[in-house]
Length: 199
Image (tube, rainbow, N blue to C red; front, side, top):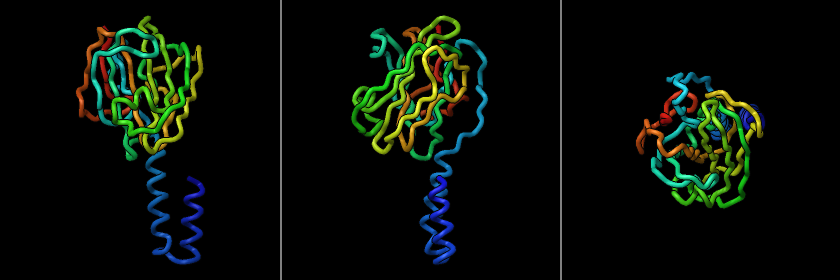
């Protein structure tokens, strides 16, 4: 971000505002992409699972959690380049493990992106005892997954734990009895909106 504003200022000073206009547009795009506004969960219910990402719901289905090999309710949030890309813990819980998987960079909205794209899985045990898995999935443009948490760390709901650059998705695997609070096409905000409620 610093480089983009330096370039815009330099061109603006040397060649004028119209020559610098494209660089100012790039700077404003980067500025909005890296924004990370404060958020407050809409529910304090211990059974509520809060969205870990801004974006649009693209999957709500009963499936298998491939990281635990158990039945699960899967909810996926697709982030486009205009969404804030900071990831937040969906629950109060302790990190069991963090595992990185190299892979492709397919369009993150495609179903096969969940298992074929570069990704980072964070397995958690909630304070109430349930287990979930949250997976950062790289996308067509996203080429950098950042994860700030480590095994045995305790995360509070809404706490920032990661970031994915330029378009991607988050897959959340919940216990099979969980009740979804969203449907495909819904827009959600990280750290605010409820994705589901645990049974």
